[in-house]
Length: 142
Image 1 (tube, rainbow, N blue to C red):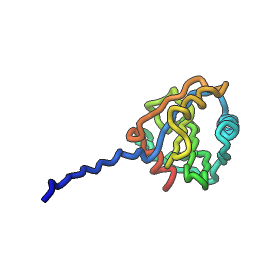
Image 2 (image 1 turned 180 degrees about the horizontal axis):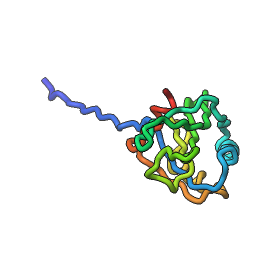
Image 3 (image 1 turned 90 degrees about the horizontal axis):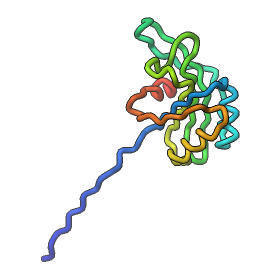
Image 4 (image 1 turned 90 degrees about the vertical axis):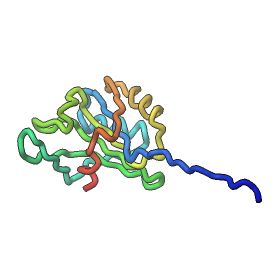
């Protein structure tokens, strides 16, 4: 009888979403227009904001966001302004003006996506963050 072969299956940890921070002087509608032109998407401001509990204030704060879902590639785009009203979505990152969240991204290679964002004239800086540092998507999709 021949020797039995043993196979070990391993799976890469899939990143459930990607988070990018943008520093820009653009208003949210202007950045949306730039992103729509650059990536061929149609980010639209959502009527219903999501609420986030702010422990410092012991209250909920509403955050408006823009959304687009690519029906062919099933990628979902979210754009959220970090500072709305007098509160920050991520108070520990005050230098970030916007967060772009890509859920189930099968259409944009992260390094290429970053390079394209950096080419927008009004964008000062772009940062990539580890999704484990954020619970944004829980609020956006609930």
